[in-house]
Image (cartoon, rainbow, N blue to C red; front, side, top):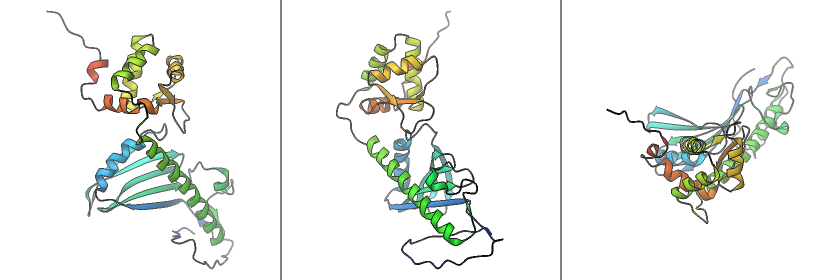
Length: 255
């Protein structure tokens, strides 16, 4: 048996009836969401994307779509882990929705959420369904708490702000090879992070030792991002349309 189960209020008393053993309840995808009032939701979603860009090493996706009420809509999808995504979009022209989606067929979830490892999303009774929904709601709340903490950190001014020039100078001082320094700076500006690989590893470790880079939170690929002290310096470089002139080689052909 397949269908949708909506649990609007956990304080409601629910009467659970057993069903024949041949019948099964199969939860395939569960959405848990929070909505917030916003006067300019599309603009705020655009601002949120920058704050969510460095949440983990997985790429943030943006989808544009047509909406009857909004006109041009936009949805930001932040991969959390296998089978779990956070979606942020304007539900109406006055509300923003944060939606945690668990795809239980692909979900990589802590053991206490999985339940039975043999069949983690199929149940013989509604009591199992409600119990699973409660665990997923708890997991979604923990994800939201972590995401909000990350966004607060991204929007907090550092106590010792660095200018763009400081970031360029400090990287050049730490990395003796100008070509490697150029690649590192360009990659940071383009992707906001650098993934560790053999040619770059010793330089990344040195930059970490000097407090310029740090290992990205929720990291599986050993990616590095700038420390909070250099965050606004990197943003300044990224917003400068002339930045490629600082790192891209220019060749001129003689007459």
